[in-house]
Structure formats: structure tokens, C-alpha cells
Image 1 (cartoon, rainbow, N blue to C red):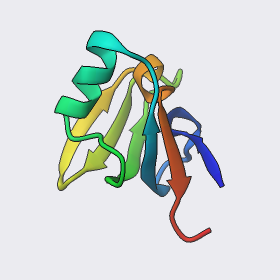
Image 2: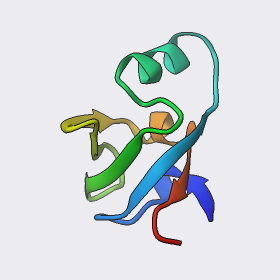
Image 3: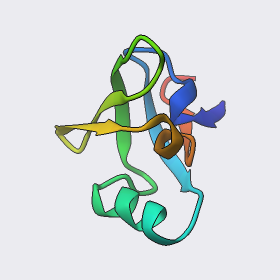
Image 4: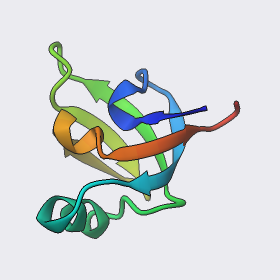
Length: 78
């Protein structure tokens, strides 16, 4: 099942399938290691859903919800 990273529940794992967008925003995500095939776990969400804390490639990152909406994921284990 595919959904965007901002739709994941805390503790959910998935694999990046597609990065939408263009220009600086897309380049920033790719530079942070969020590339197709990378496994991501959603660690925390702020009370209003923005920002999100994720683990990717062994380190923690904080993303804005608008950035997370650009990352199409496939949930691991289902």
C-alpha cells in the first residue's frame, strides 16, 4: 500500500518509492538521503502534525509536513 510520508503513523516503517516536486525542495530531500529505495521510520510527530521526525540511513531528520507530502512511500510488511 502506498501513501505519503506525512500519512504514516508513529513507528511505521516504509521504503521510498517516489519523490515528487521539483527544484530546490526536491534537491533538498535527495541531498538529505531521502532517495528511492531508502527505508524510513517515522519516529515522532508534533502535536499539530508539523514537523515530523524520521530515521533514514541511520540518522534522525526533522521534516516539515509539506516536505513529507512529496515523499511517496510503500509500507514495509504489507
